[in-house]
Image (cartoon, rainbow, N blue to C red):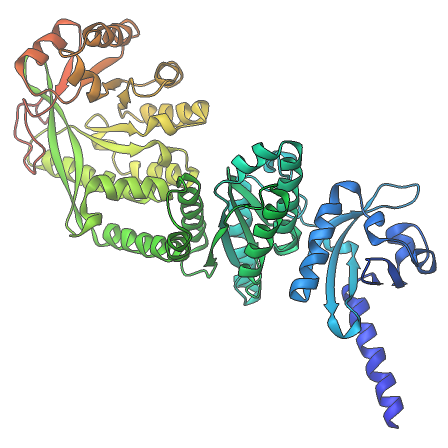
Length: 548
């Protein structure tokens, strides 16, 4: 076989490889007109390849996708390639065909762009998101959907032996510029959104996280600096003053270092923190801060789980007394960590766990520790009742609820003594499901208390929806009761409501006799605070009954 035959054989191989990955190929000139077409264009566009010659490829896609296509072609010119990007190709006398488009630009070929079109790649629901997952103004994924996509990319990358990147982009001033430009501002926003999509995985992995804050999941080779510059130039072109705005970006490597569940939580935490930031940082701070946040979050989760698994925390007990007798009715179990440093504060420790979504692990560990204390007291002839805190975030997790019920199977002898206090109740979204879970716990024989009643505008809605045995009135109302004009009346109304619907009330932060007397007078039955005792390891005090 001669050299010419070898070249022909190699050419045929590459053609075969190409058609195994795509259905049709187009070559576009510098004006994006089709100068060559081959493959199943009849299926994709309703016409034979020869009919596409001299047509603008932009005219072949739906109007809604043309900005995305323009951005993708610009990406190819700037970086050499783009895609896959999902878009709709118009088809004569039929619904548009959804295809994935890949593009390559070769400077050696007069700046022409070579496209590969593959219809079969659009089979994943993640690539054609539900309308509810999209931001209405930009068409990008909303924050929650973007978090899900980033997590799926992390898992897919791990399975394929590669790591995708997630870049968070801050465009502080975009909304101000958009308002200044009027209708042209909407066009600018759509143009920027299209550029983000064009550079994301599958052209469908970019999201609007908040006003002026965006994110995209992309391959590691993406030139993020070039993307930043491109967006900045677009804002300068749109701004009549030529000022535009500065764009900052920080890239996080989506390398899975923990379990899939914990990595997903770390991702969501990082994205939420980015969303909450107010833009009062420099571009350098953004780059340095968010580039490391994912790693720091993962490290904190690992440290958190080590603390729990090693049992490096203690339960302190603060008495809750019956105001009429001052006898101890039960205790609240409070955590004290055995570690040092900024994370040693129980508030910081638990707040982080709630925000990142791992609080359920701690709630189970604390339940075990408190239950063991109650059982030990029983063996010593003492009846000890203790309320253990469960976060509203935990109770919304089916995995946590299953684990809790599995453990409570071993607590049949201490049902009445083991009380649960539902905290973070203002963050509960599905009240009906939460109430069903609460009733399941109460049916076992455990009492349930709703913590922080009065905080938040929907407090009475929670009380109406959640059937509980006790309500703990938020301490801020107790502290203000005797010092503000309407404090007494407001507190009395809450106590009266609870009494009328047969729910016992507990008031916290009681520090003096005057407050205690007033609370008893308005019908609050139980009290907690430094007047009766600080949290400690001891549980001395008169209980309501003795061990049988």
